Amino acid sequence: MEENDVIDLLIHQHNMIKDLFDEVERASMSERPEAFRRLVRMLAVHETAEEEIVHPYARRKLEGGKEIVDDRLTEENEAKQMLEHMDESGVNDPEFMSNLAHLRTSVLAHAQNEERYEFAQLREHTSEAERRTMAAAVKAAEAIAPTHPHPGVESATKNVLLGTPAAIMDRVRDGIRRARGDKS
Ligand SMILES: [Fe+2]
Ligand SMILES: [Fe+2]
Image (cartoon, rainbow, N blue to C red; front, side, top):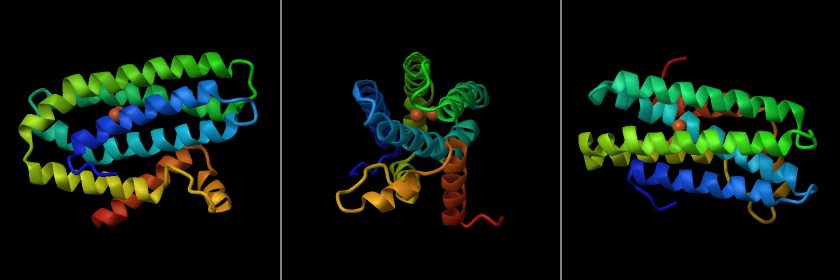
């Protein structure tokens, strides 16, 4: 990914998330598990990177940052619970498609709120260098959990794709904190 500005990068990921929802919706029953895993992975990487890297910064630096970020975290937690529920009940659950539509509406509204209320202000209150540093950290989080299977590494990818949404988020969070040099 080329984006060196964290805001551009996160908006790009919002578009990828939208595409992945399309893919799950269009997938045949046999393609559905894999398509859903890709969506889970992307959401886990994206929301965890925001929570670890971007929201803390916005909370400190933006006017009304605390309220803005608290609202975003409420939305993120709601989506996580839905995702966790869908993961537990599985892709063959009769409610899967209606849950997916509900999750999509909620996640995309959340993304729009971020772009409108958080990212726009953040762009004004950060330097290019700060946005570049944060972009590098988000990319490192993505590298911990690859989003695109490459031909020839199917089995490795399948292994990486295992785990509940919460487990994937924990792994990404640990990776970000280790890369940052936090003491655990
Ligand atoms: Fe988010
Ligand atoms: Fe986001």
